[in-house]
Image 1 (cartoon, rainbow, N blue to C red):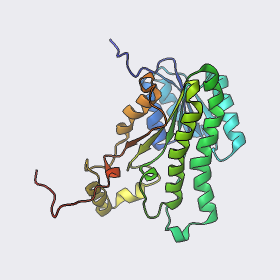
Image 2: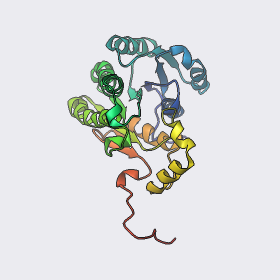
Image 3: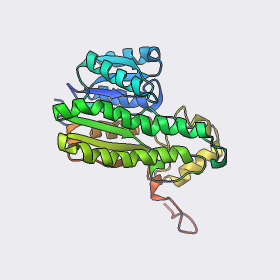
Image 4: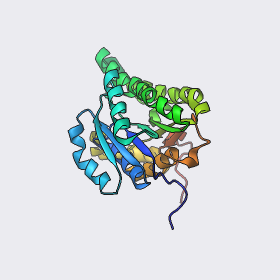
Length: 265
């Protein structure tokens, strides 16, 4: 007997930035919970293999080209998803980018690339999807943030600013659209290995340093995000909106050792 909880059967989820990394993990988790999946990439042909994987689960799919830095691209992608799958019940605003540089080396172009993708793109994708949700009186919008929305890291000034903006944007949209049955939340992963940061994980000393700062003593694994994203997409989160859910192993607690030596086990 299947569980009545966290069942997304009959729902349509649109996940942006699905050509690799966490976007695929989010889409896979939602599909396994029963949702049909719309996926996107700047080059839709890169989604062919992943689309077949999701269809093998018995789900309907569509794949669209989307560049969240372009308003026309956002509108066209949302319209095409709605044409093919009928509607969008769940939006996962995942498309994002990062450029790691010391603050004094960040260029005007670096700043615009990061903010246009991570913050402006998130807002205008939500804005394009929201009218359909409002008309139906139901919607789940999940903006993907980061632990950098609550903590500062050297070398990540524009990225942290963009993710902090996503956190504030989430609260504003939750207040704007809550009366229409649309919840808006931010899912904020901690340190997970992705294509954007893979080079860091090649350095043993850095990984040891990172793990020492994380109370659970390990970086995140992709499966750690499956339950949270399904929860925020489901009916079980109906009274949760405007919130930032940190999935970070506890690193946002500060994790500063306040004793001479760690306590013995």
